[in-house]
Length: 369
Image 1: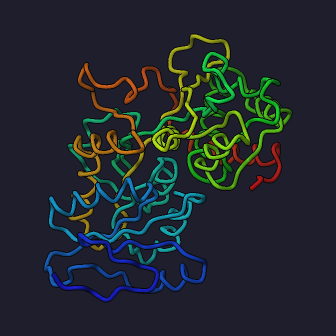
Image 2 (image 1 turned 30 degrees about the vertical axis):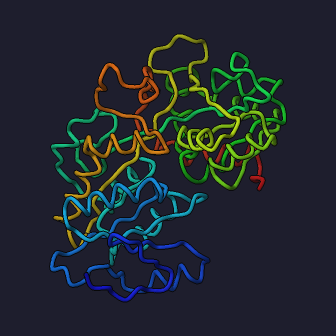
């Protein structure tokens, strides 16, 4: 296998990967201007370029498996934890007139929804994707959701008994948590979509204005916003800086695997209790084909692979313990499914997220580091 030249800001991974390491802004600019290169350039089959906001240690085995199955060389560009999907989505927008990516694999669904509306992602008919619930895919096939994570409340098992942990998102406004609650900066990542879902759900199913009252309660409790993303929230709880925090299930699973004294609750969104379809929010990964992709055939193959049961099982068994959307074997772990997730239109959530983020930032002021 021949070795192509490797541009600055890239490193070679055994197995045919050229993985971009996100460095400083100058390196990012220089690397963005350089031509993408592939390992195995003597292979006559054209490669596929994929932008990925999922964590590198989770995504890499999946993409390696695809390369092994298909023989198609893969070039991967990753994003940072703090900016996550937002950074790569903006890069796709900036490259719209001269696209470099063939596929976008997003760790959340809301930016792909917006990119599809902007014409940056194009329709793809997937028989494999048709097996997944309609709530998690677009009818036109411009984005396809798979392997979700759950929004959860992480709590310290050293300082909080499980019976005392918050059971609903509204419980975080209880005064007993004053000064002990953390959340990620909502301008990025899954927190952005979650606050949009809260606004959309409460406006449509409870009462307009409740979201603002909820934020007032968080403010009165001195809720802290952290710039390091959801992982920073879990870290802060584990270190004793906070007792509870708003985060994603995969970050808590990682912490538990590392031996940290934390656990999680899947909180409900219903204000009065007992409402069907008011459980916690599921945020799927999402994949789509970039408009103007240089290798649309390989791009279609990769998207179908990401939607497959094989990848669903890989991600469920990975360190992130992603949930599954297909029917499970009756003996499968209950941890892999949520019985009553929040019933909300993901497109509406994408629409309401900017308004929700604006309210959060105005109410809770600037994020703390």
